[in-house]
Image (cartoon, rainbow, N blue to C red; front, top):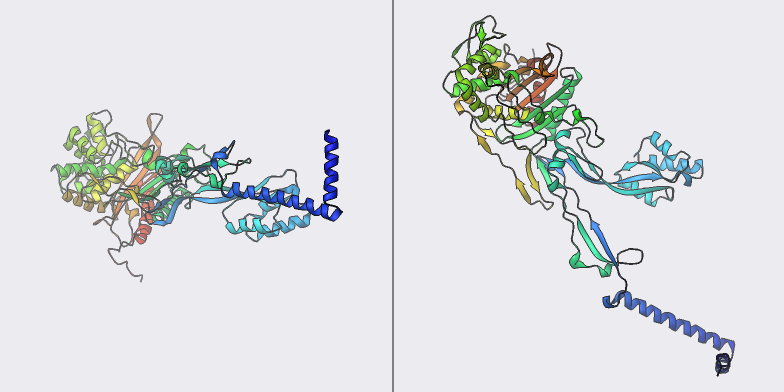
Length: 587
């Protein structure tokens, strides 16, 4: 039978069976309903009770779960963040989708209610123009983002892009220690770089099956192959952010008043533990906005600048000679004019040719220090300098630490110059640790910058406890040196500007010529002061160095001592160190 005749006969049979239009319509509707019910049942079975064995051409799905970078806190913990990662949003405007001035005014008012952007920036972003993408700025204001996503005024005209940003609440403060990480959280310098293996964490991954649009089909996720992200550890520093702020302010004032026109650096430490409480260097930079290109600003002078310390080294010459039993504080030294190892020495002896060791320190006598160097000899002086930690790295977890050298050409002249702080080099950190040994009774401490490394759940994975790495002098000698250094800060000493009302201070000034093109400059000097407070039981050792010119501001007692005095007064209040004597009441 031909097909055409078959279909005609079948149609006639159906017509006879379902005579009438209504019956025919009901039949067709019933067929459609049965078809869609069967398809629905099939879809329900496939989606709710899938059979992986019958999936054909499955698309592999993989998504990275980013780990959150750890935070850096000061010594007081989570309430005092120094570096943290925050969720932020980039806001962009579509100027071509703003039809008229009325809409533009409504957008301006809607933004202005949040106060997130400056009026000039808003006006520029909302001005008429071509293009569908104009960046307005970045914000962390969740209320603004919520408003943008729900307010009809913003719809189709303002968009947002999720992002994260590393922020530094102290701004420029502690920039040389913290360093910085870029917008992709790649570390570039400082602790962000040296401790990156602890901070960055480990990314996780989700694996499974995707649909045609490469979206994950959740019920096909491979739980065995899915690895959760492990967030980075948090770092707790020994830094006190209040002390850091005070030290920064003191250095900024020195730069502003021309006490340190070129550069300045300062370091504060607890001599009892070796903990670094504050570290500051100028010039500096803002890690949240820095784009690079200025090596001078990136340079952490507290650990990287190696320089001749000047007369601050005379305390170590006296300590070494006293520890060897060669002199006492009352021993008379011949400081009369003449040749010292074949060279004349300039000096300030107040017209006297005989000085005690104590007077030598108080008046900073070059000839007296030279006498001590000759008594010690090259070998013993070198032995004591190395015992104080000079000439070797301290191990602080920052890149670029200088080492310095304890000897020059090794001649007798070089030996007596070393006693005066010339002919050898050191860093500010080495000097601070060495004076810390005088302050704490003769113990050279390992410097502590990182106190703890903690996981996000609070578990401590690394703790740095105070550690004694040497004993360069005896406790009795250390006490005698501290007593002699108190005279340096007296009215007749070289550091009278370092006095702090209500507290006794022991310390030493130093001035040295800078080396320019291989020669000592007669215009460029560094002035330093290093002090201990309170003098009889020091809880704080502070070193300040200024690159100053011209004279007489180059002297450490003029440029560096006032910086110490300002900071030490603030630090005593912050650390709640009780005053040793009641201040005199005004008349």
